[in-house]
Length: 345
Ligand code: SAH
Image 1 (tube, rainbow, N blue to C red):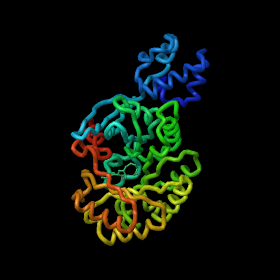
Image 2 (tube, rainbow, N blue to C red):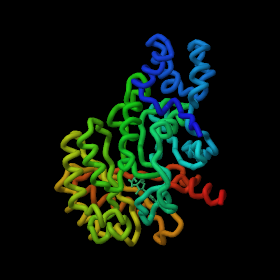
Image 3 (cartoon, rainbow, N blue to C red):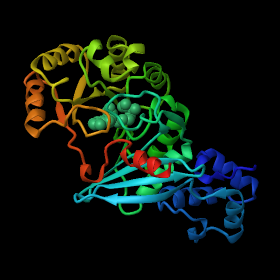
């Protein structure tokens, strides 16, 4: 079968070459890029200043978008959760979080499923299916940009971004390119469960996103209980690699720490975390546990989160709290996709 590609699979160089091969002037590629990534057009027919012949050539060979929106759910506070479907019938999720007129953060996925199987996370519950293509990564942003321009992208949806490095790198270039989204290089964050070879690859590459690492526990013993990846890449190795990236990017790495009451929020945990992180350039981002099926711990109260935060603040760290947006619509990682897959069965 001859699989049709989406136009968003092509790099800007490839778009220029293609249009030249078809006999169009150079500036037409710039116009097309503008339609795709500034106006977020999802149909070639909308591209009113392109010649009819070019629109026909594009429609003949490519899809304009690699995803369709299956469902959106809007929370009371304006967070919109998107369920997308790929051409091969898989589901992925994205979340749009507008904050006033100035800020609009979107959270996007990089894989279908996830290989890590972290115990508290819905994304890996059904295992790993496949990597997303660059078009599928970028098209989540295109489809979520319709109402308000995007200021920040967090690559923290389904999957492990650093295991899909080539596509991640290509998407990052589109996000930061002035001809497309022109998002500040540090306003693109990449979160990893601690895949050390991926961080090393980031160090060797020339892209410099803000790095966020899912730490979630201060000792190997505890971390291995909830993040199986820790058996392979223990904390020491992870921290040394993060330090190199922090030096290179001249920005502290942000360490995510899910507050799981009765598991990792005691005084001893705070002390161990301080001891660990004080040797490194680090920020801490606390995440209250979101409820997830099959993980028996309860969610923390606000007081429990603030209490843990204050122990870290008094040690001199910058400690932010990521209050869950859209909890009322099940916006925790992988929940919507999980529900959809089950209803498909
Ligand atoms: N694989 C990457 C990115 C995806 S998860 C990673 O592990 O970092 C994005 C963040 O949400 C991670 O910090 C992850 O640990 C966290 N997360 C997953 N399930 C959660 C839950 N039930 N409650 C709170 N945070 C969760």
